Length: 105
Image (tube, rainbow, N blue to C red):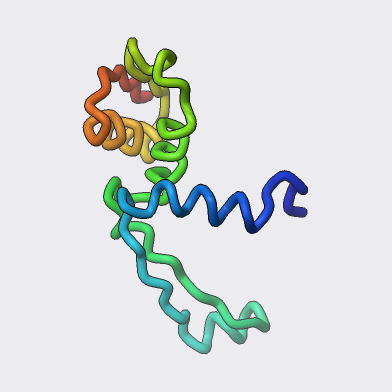
């Protein structure tokens, strides 16, 4: 169930803020075999073509744009096993922020 606070208006507002910093990634129709298995039409979103390599860039960009500038004076920190860490590093570079990124072994 989609939370009430996640309205189409909010999604459009966020998209208008981040769109110049992200790639529009392709949506590709899956083959008929997959459609038959799930009894529906399946589409695949190719997020590997996003600037950071995953959909996480959208959230990281929105987080920075929504943050108070004073909160960003000391930079950002992220702890992740992969995609979020890469997105946070990408965003830190875009916005020229100091950053500490911690990856799990």
